[in-house]
Length: 301
Ligand SMILES: Nc1ncnc2c1ncn2[C@@H]1O[C@H](COP(=O)(O)OP(=O)(O)OP(=O)(O)O)[C@@H](O)[C@H]1O
Image (tube, rainbow, N blue to C red; front, top):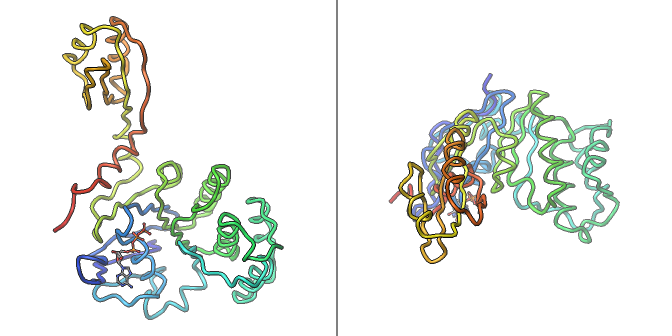
Protein backbone atom coordinates (compact mmCIF):
# COMPACT_ATOMS: atom_id res chain seq x y z
CA UNK A 1 0.00 0.00 0.00
CA UNK A 2 1.12 3.56 -0.69
CA UNK A 3 1.59 5.59 2.50
CA UNK A 4 2.52 8.96 0.99
CA UNK A 5 1.82 10.04 -2.56
CA UNK A 6 2.82 13.35 -4.08
CA UNK A 7 1.61 14.11 -7.59
CA UNK A 8 2.89 17.09 -9.60
CA UNK A 9 2.99 19.31 -6.52
CA UNK A 10 3.78 22.94 -7.34
CA UNK A 11 4.06 26.10 -5.25
CA UNK A 12 5.69 28.99 -7.05
CA UNK A 13 6.92 31.77 -4.74
CA UNK A 14 8.35 33.68 -7.71
CA UNK A 15 11.98 34.22 -8.71
CA UNK A 16 12.44 30.47 -9.27
CA UNK A 17 11.75 29.85 -5.59
CA UNK A 18 9.32 27.20 -4.38
CA UNK A 19 8.65 23.66 -5.61
CA UNK A 20 7.83 22.63 -9.15
CA UNK A 21 6.11 19.46 -10.36
CA UNK A 22 7.26 17.30 -7.44
CA UNK A 23 6.09 13.68 -7.66
CA UNK A 24 7.06 10.63 -5.61
CA UNK A 25 5.52 7.81 -3.62
CA UNK A 26 6.46 6.20 -0.33
CA UNK A 27 5.25 2.69 0.30
CA UNK A 28 4.21 1.20 3.62
CA UNK A 29 7.31 0.24 5.60
CA UNK A 30 9.60 2.36 3.46
CA UNK A 31 12.12 4.89 4.75
CA UNK A 32 12.51 7.65 2.19
CA UNK A 33 15.35 10.15 2.39
CA UNK A 34 14.93 13.67 1.11
CA UNK A 35 18.22 15.38 0.37
CA UNK A 36 19.09 18.71 -1.09
CA UNK A 37 20.98 21.95 -0.52
CA UNK A 38 19.61 24.79 1.61
CA UNK A 39 16.52 26.36 0.09
CA UNK A 40 15.92 23.43 -2.29
CA UNK A 41 12.29 22.90 -1.26
CA UNK A 42 12.33 20.07 1.30
CA UNK A 43 10.46 21.93 4.04
CA UNK A 44 7.97 23.40 1.55
CA UNK A 45 7.16 19.89 0.28
CA UNK A 46 6.76 18.59 3.84
CA UNK A 47 4.56 21.51 4.87
CA UNK A 48 2.19 20.59 2.03
CA UNK A 49 1.98 17.07 3.45
CA UNK A 50 1.13 18.52 6.86
CA UNK A 51 -1.74 20.50 5.31
CA UNK A 52 -0.12 23.85 6.22
CA UNK A 53 0.11 24.98 2.58
CA UNK A 54 -2.49 24.71 -0.15
CA UNK A 55 -0.89 23.53 -3.40
CA UNK A 56 -1.08 25.80 -6.43
CA UNK A 57 -1.35 22.71 -8.55
CA UNK A 58 -0.91 19.01 -8.00
CA UNK A 59 -1.91 17.10 -4.88
CA UNK A 60 -0.65 14.91 -2.09
CA UNK A 61 -2.16 12.14 -0.01
CA UNK A 62 -1.22 10.31 3.17
CA UNK A 63 -2.89 6.91 3.68
CA UNK A 64 -5.14 7.83 0.75
CA UNK A 65 -6.42 10.96 2.53
CA UNK A 66 -5.96 14.35 0.85
CA UNK A 67 -3.32 16.39 2.69
CA UNK A 68 -5.13 19.70 2.27
CA UNK A 69 -8.81 18.83 2.76
CA UNK A 70 -8.44 15.87 5.15
CA UNK A 71 -5.47 16.98 7.22
CA UNK A 72 -7.32 16.67 10.54
CA UNK A 73 -7.98 12.98 9.94
CA UNK A 74 -4.38 12.47 8.80
CA UNK A 75 -3.03 13.98 12.07
CA UNK A 76 -4.19 10.91 14.01
CA UNK A 77 -1.84 8.68 12.06
CA UNK A 78 1.04 11.11 11.64
CA UNK A 79 4.11 12.05 13.63
CA UNK A 80 5.88 15.26 12.63
CA UNK A 81 9.18 16.71 13.68
CA UNK A 82 9.68 20.22 12.28
CA UNK A 83 13.10 21.60 11.36
CA UNK A 84 12.62 24.52 13.71
CA UNK A 85 10.62 23.65 16.76
CA UNK A 86 8.71 26.51 18.37
CA UNK A 87 7.92 25.29 21.89
CA UNK A 88 6.18 27.34 24.57
CA UNK A 89 9.26 28.33 26.59
CA UNK A 90 7.57 28.66 29.97
CA UNK A 91 6.67 25.00 30.28
CA UNK A 92 8.89 22.19 31.46
CA UNK A 93 9.58 19.37 29.00
CA UNK A 94 7.42 17.07 31.14
CA UNK A 95 4.46 19.48 30.98
CA UNK A 96 4.82 19.81 27.22
CA UNK A 97 4.97 16.05 26.64
CA UNK A 98 1.92 15.57 28.91
CA UNK A 99 0.08 18.32 27.08
CA UNK A 100 0.88 16.76 23.68
CA UNK A 101 -0.23 13.35 25.02
CA UNK A 102 -3.49 14.87 26.32
CA UNK A 103 -4.18 16.51 22.92
CA UNK A 104 -3.76 13.14 21.25
CA UNK A 105 -5.82 11.33 23.88
CA UNK A 106 -2.89 9.18 25.03
CA UNK A 107 -3.22 7.85 28.58
CA UNK A 108 -0.49 5.23 28.56
CA UNK A 109 2.85 7.04 28.75
CA UNK A 110 4.91 3.85 28.39
CA UNK A 111 6.17 4.64 24.88
CA UNK A 112 6.99 8.24 25.85
CA UNK A 113 9.03 6.94 28.81
CA UNK A 114 10.81 4.39 26.56
CA UNK A 115 11.81 7.22 24.21
CA UNK A 116 12.99 9.42 27.12
CA UNK A 117 15.12 6.52 28.37
CA UNK A 118 16.44 5.78 24.89
CA UNK A 119 17.57 9.40 24.44
CA UNK A 120 18.68 9.76 28.06
CA UNK A 121 16.55 12.86 28.61
CA UNK A 122 15.31 14.25 31.90
CA UNK A 123 12.43 16.47 30.69
CA UNK A 124 11.75 18.14 34.06
CA UNK A 125 13.82 21.23 33.06
CA UNK A 126 12.10 24.40 31.83
CA UNK A 127 12.21 24.45 28.03
CA UNK A 128 13.81 27.91 27.99
CA UNK A 129 16.74 26.46 29.94
CA UNK A 130 17.17 23.47 27.62
CA UNK A 131 20.02 23.13 25.12
CA UNK A 132 19.19 22.79 21.40
CA UNK A 133 19.84 19.05 21.60
CA UNK A 134 17.52 18.63 24.62
CA UNK A 135 14.73 20.49 22.82
CA UNK A 136 15.28 18.27 19.79
CA UNK A 137 14.87 15.20 22.00
CA UNK A 138 11.57 16.58 23.37
CA UNK A 139 10.48 17.05 19.73
CA UNK A 140 11.42 13.45 18.93
CA UNK A 141 9.41 12.13 21.91
CA UNK A 142 6.37 14.17 20.82
CA UNK A 143 6.67 12.96 17.20
CA UNK A 144 6.98 9.25 18.06
CA UNK A 145 5.09 8.71 21.34
CA UNK A 146 1.68 7.96 19.80
CA UNK A 147 3.19 5.22 17.62
CA UNK A 148 2.10 6.86 14.34
CA UNK A 149 1.86 4.91 11.10
CA UNK A 150 3.54 7.68 9.09
CA UNK A 151 6.40 9.94 10.17
CA UNK A 152 7.61 13.16 8.58
CA UNK A 153 10.95 14.25 10.00
CA UNK A 154 12.60 17.50 8.91
CA UNK A 155 16.32 17.31 9.71
CA UNK A 156 15.63 15.22 12.79
CA UNK A 157 19.12 15.03 14.26
CA UNK A 158 19.86 18.78 14.25
CA UNK A 159 21.58 19.57 17.52
CA UNK A 160 22.06 15.93 18.58
CA UNK A 161 25.56 14.80 19.46
CA UNK A 162 27.08 11.88 17.50
CA UNK A 163 26.08 9.31 20.14
CA UNK A 164 22.47 10.50 20.05
CA UNK A 165 22.53 10.59 16.25
CA UNK A 166 23.34 6.89 16.30
CA UNK A 167 20.53 6.26 18.83
CA UNK A 168 18.25 8.05 16.38
CA UNK A 169 19.38 5.78 13.53
CA UNK A 170 18.49 2.77 15.76
CA UNK A 171 15.06 4.27 16.42
CA UNK A 172 14.41 4.65 12.69
CA UNK A 173 15.51 1.07 12.08
CA UNK A 174 13.12 -0.17 14.82
CA UNK A 175 10.22 1.84 13.40
CA UNK A 176 10.94 0.50 9.92
CA UNK A 177 10.83 -3.05 11.33
CA UNK A 178 7.37 -2.25 12.68
CA UNK A 179 6.26 -1.31 9.15
CA UNK A 180 6.16 2.46 9.64
CA UNK A 181 6.54 4.75 6.61
CA UNK A 182 9.03 7.56 7.05
CA UNK A 183 9.93 10.65 5.05
CA UNK A 184 13.08 12.22 6.40
CA UNK A 185 15.17 15.14 5.24
CA UNK A 186 18.78 15.28 6.28
CA UNK A 187 22.16 16.71 5.43
CA UNK A 188 23.97 13.77 7.04
CA UNK A 189 25.00 11.11 4.54
CA UNK A 190 25.72 8.48 7.16
CA UNK A 191 22.27 8.88 8.64
CA UNK A 192 20.66 8.56 5.22
CA UNK A 193 22.91 5.68 4.19
CA UNK A 194 22.16 3.80 7.42
CA UNK A 195 18.39 4.08 7.26
CA UNK A 196 16.86 4.89 3.87
CA UNK A 197 15.57 2.46 1.23
CA UNK A 198 15.13 5.24 -1.30
CA UNK A 199 16.57 8.72 -1.63
CA UNK A 200 15.25 11.64 -3.65
CA UNK A 201 17.51 14.58 -4.34
CA UNK A 202 15.83 17.94 -4.75
CA UNK A 203 17.49 21.02 -6.14
CA UNK A 204 15.96 24.40 -6.92
CA UNK A 205 12.50 23.01 -6.24
CA UNK A 206 12.75 20.04 -8.60
CA UNK A 207 13.51 16.37 -8.02
CA UNK A 208 16.69 15.68 -9.95
CA UNK A 209 17.42 12.11 -8.94
CA UNK A 210 15.71 9.19 -7.18
CA UNK A 211 17.87 6.28 -6.12
CA UNK A 212 17.09 3.10 -4.26
CA UNK A 213 19.50 1.44 -1.87
CA UNK A 214 20.51 -1.06 -4.54
CA UNK A 215 21.67 1.87 -6.66
CA UNK A 216 23.89 3.18 -3.85
CA UNK A 217 25.89 -0.01 -4.13
CA UNK A 218 26.83 0.92 -7.67
CA UNK A 219 28.51 3.94 -6.19
CA UNK A 220 30.70 1.75 -4.04
CA UNK A 221 33.86 3.54 -4.93
CA UNK A 222 36.62 4.77 -2.70
CA UNK A 223 38.81 7.79 -3.21
CA UNK A 224 42.49 7.59 -2.24
CA UNK A 225 45.23 10.15 -2.00
CA UNK A 226 48.44 8.38 -3.06
CA UNK A 227 51.87 9.91 -2.47
CA UNK A 228 55.04 8.59 -4.14
CA UNK A 229 58.70 8.88 -3.26
CA UNK A 230 59.96 9.33 -6.82
CA UNK A 231 58.87 11.00 -10.05
CA UNK A 232 59.01 7.79 -12.15
CA UNK A 233 56.46 6.00 -9.96
CA UNK A 234 54.33 9.16 -9.68
CA UNK A 235 54.24 9.41 -13.50
CA UNK A 236 53.85 5.73 -14.30
CA UNK A 237 50.83 5.24 -12.02
CA UNK A 238 49.00 7.84 -14.12
CA UNK A 239 49.41 5.61 -17.18
CA UNK A 240 47.59 2.72 -15.46
CA UNK A 241 43.89 2.23 -16.02
CA UNK A 242 42.60 4.06 -12.92
CA UNK A 243 40.24 6.98 -12.70
CA UNK A 244 42.48 9.89 -11.75
CA UNK A 245 40.66 12.83 -10.19
CA UNK A 246 43.58 15.11 -9.37
CA UNK A 247 47.35 15.29 -9.79
CA UNK A 248 49.61 17.37 -7.51
CA UNK A 249 53.02 17.41 -9.16
CA UNK A 250 54.83 19.39 -6.49
CA UNK A 251 53.88 16.79 -3.83
CA UNK A 252 54.10 13.72 -6.13
CA UNK A 253 50.49 13.05 -5.23
CA UNK A 254 47.68 11.45 -7.23
CA UNK A 255 44.02 11.26 -6.20
CA UNK A 256 42.29 8.20 -7.63
CA UNK A 257 38.75 6.90 -7.42
CA UNK A 258 38.59 3.12 -7.32
CA UNK A 259 35.59 0.86 -7.77
CA UNK A 260 35.67 -1.84 -5.09
CA UNK A 261 36.05 -4.56 -7.72
CA UNK A 262 39.26 -2.92 -8.97
CA UNK A 263 40.85 -2.73 -5.51
CA UNK A 264 43.20 -5.69 -6.08
CA UNK A 265 44.49 -4.10 -9.28
CA UNK A 266 45.34 -0.93 -7.35
CA UNK A 267 47.11 -2.87 -4.60
CA UNK A 268 49.08 -4.81 -7.18
CA UNK A 269 50.07 -1.59 -9.04
CA UNK A 270 51.14 0.08 -5.79
CA UNK A 271 53.20 -2.92 -4.66
CA UNK A 272 55.49 -2.34 -7.66
CA UNK A 273 56.09 1.30 -6.71
CA UNK A 274 57.67 3.27 -3.91
CA UNK A 275 54.66 4.67 -2.06
CA UNK A 276 55.11 7.08 0.85
CA UNK A 277 51.46 7.21 1.95
CA UNK A 278 47.93 6.08 1.10
CA UNK A 279 44.97 7.97 2.55
CA UNK A 280 41.29 7.37 2.00
CA UNK A 281 39.88 10.83 1.54
CA UNK A 282 36.14 10.57 1.35
CA UNK A 283 33.12 8.43 1.29
CA UNK A 284 31.93 7.81 -2.25
CA UNK A 285 28.21 8.16 -1.55
CA UNK A 286 28.97 11.55 -0.09
CA UNK A 287 31.04 12.38 -3.16
CA UNK A 288 28.14 11.33 -5.35
CA UNK A 289 25.73 13.65 -3.55
CA UNK A 290 28.23 16.47 -3.49
CA UNK A 291 28.15 16.35 -7.25
CA UNK A 292 24.45 17.27 -7.09
CA UNK A 293 24.95 19.91 -4.42
CA UNK A 294 27.63 21.78 -6.35
CA UNK A 295 26.80 25.16 -7.77
CA UNK A 296 26.00 25.12 -11.46
CA UNK A 297 25.57 21.39 -11.89
CA UNK A 298 22.04 20.16 -12.68
CA UNK A 299 20.75 23.71 -12.25
CA UNK A 300 17.52 24.74 -13.87
CA UNK A 301 17.27 28.13 -15.52
N1 LIG B 1 6.42 31.57 2.54
C1 LIG B 1 7.37 31.76 1.62
N2 LIG B 1 7.39 32.85 0.83
C2 LIG B 1 8.33 33.04 -0.12
N3 LIG B 1 9.33 32.16 -0.37
C3 LIG B 1 9.37 31.04 0.37
C4 LIG B 1 8.39 30.77 1.40
N4 LIG B 1 8.70 29.56 1.98
C5 LIG B 1 9.80 29.11 1.33
N5 LIG B 1 10.19 29.97 0.37
C6 LIG B 1 11.35 29.79 -0.56
O1 LIG B 1 11.20 28.53 -1.18
C7 LIG B 1 12.47 27.89 -1.34
C8 LIG B 1 12.46 26.54 -0.66
O2 LIG B 1 12.54 26.70 0.77
P1 LIG B 1 12.51 25.47 1.78
O3 LIG B 1 12.43 26.02 3.17
O4 LIG B 1 11.45 24.52 1.37
O5 LIG B 1 13.94 24.80 1.54
P2 LIG B 1 14.68 23.58 2.29
O6 LIG B 1 15.07 22.60 1.22
O7 LIG B 1 13.84 23.06 3.40
O8 LIG B 1 15.98 24.31 2.85
P3 LIG B 1 16.92 24.06 4.16
O9 LIG B 1 17.79 22.88 3.89
O10 LIG B 1 17.70 25.34 4.21
O11 LIG B 1 16.00 23.89 5.34
C9 LIG B 1 13.49 28.88 -0.77
O12 LIG B 1 14.01 29.65 -1.84
C10 LIG B 1 12.67 29.74 0.17
O13 LIG B 1 13.24 31.04 0.29
